[in-house]
Image (cartoon, rainbow, N blue to C red):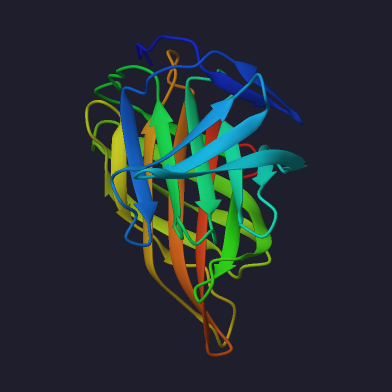
Length: 249
């Protein structure tokens, strides 16, 4: 596979975030009516994340590592997960802000440069998934969700599909049906499943993109709406994958 991409980026390694600021070439957004002016940015000097919407913003402080992500929190105001590909070329923010000036739930995935995927062949990808499960009523973070992302790209058919398995705290596996893959390595479509017996999950969406020069990395975001014991919850999360089947079927 021969993909081209460049520029430096932030990266996450255990509890340490560092790197250089970049302007993403491509962004994908999922969320509950997430406004176009919502944004998230990491400051390596202060080790904080700024979450903004319009003229309002909140600053979140680094708290703990969660799986392959770093978690940032604002006291009484929700939280944010930051996740990066190994190369640092792609990243995803998943957030839930209960702050009265923001009140947003969503995920933003991005990459640093243009990519062109191969014209034929297939490839498997695996990696971690981390997300937030939050109450719809007040957008407070309830618990973390972790799982394993499994994807198979068919470049000849211009498609990609798979799922998120071994999910903790949020229900059954998520299924990502075969989804169109553009020549620049971008996909966006539905996601199904994700609920425990007796519960429901709906309005599932997934977005992702190839992120590195070797074609070995994908970054993306997931959104699900859950109904648990008659109460509504939002799930938003991010995933990064590397080439290879790994623990995937």
